[in-house]
Length: 224
Image (cartoon, rainbow, N blue to C red; front, side, top):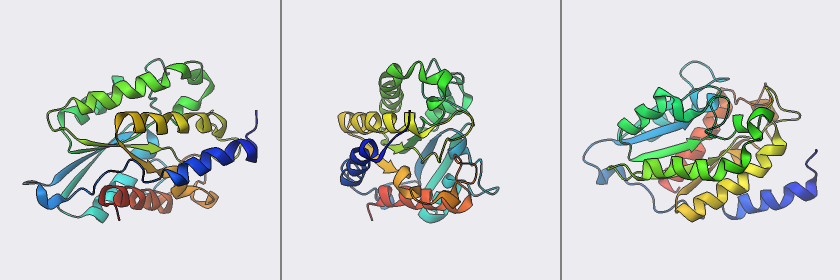
């Protein structure tokens, strides 16, 4: 199945129109007695695969935000949002560590590996599993601000079984969940759309691509 322009256009329009719809008020680090703790939850793209060492988007976000913030990378390569996926994030020590971190802000970017055929057979559970993940952070005593990310584009036929066709089905689900849970959106898709040179393996952003992701995240947190 191929996505044609008629199918893709409504999704892209929705993304543009609603880019800041659920971002909420700016986060003011001066209102915190200690640095604002930011947990970046995700898969290999969050971990930094494809970018130079020390140049993952969370690392570059730390540089952009400065010393009034502490950004921690809880990304694990190959992980899925789906509990029944081939490598659920739920089972990882990184997830447990993110909970223990008691973040003030949580940025979640999962779903890319869920587009693989072996995981997509469970996609009807994507919304409910994502809702449970969001609520597991909402229940923390730190009461963090939560942002969901529209995943990065997948070029052409994709790679590793990851594909754009299923990604285009996920994005409206993520949008709906963000709206219903009252959490923010960071549009990583828009940050890299139309820039194929930044996705050399068709899935993972390079260092420059990670920089654009960090900028998108910083703008969402600060509402610039």
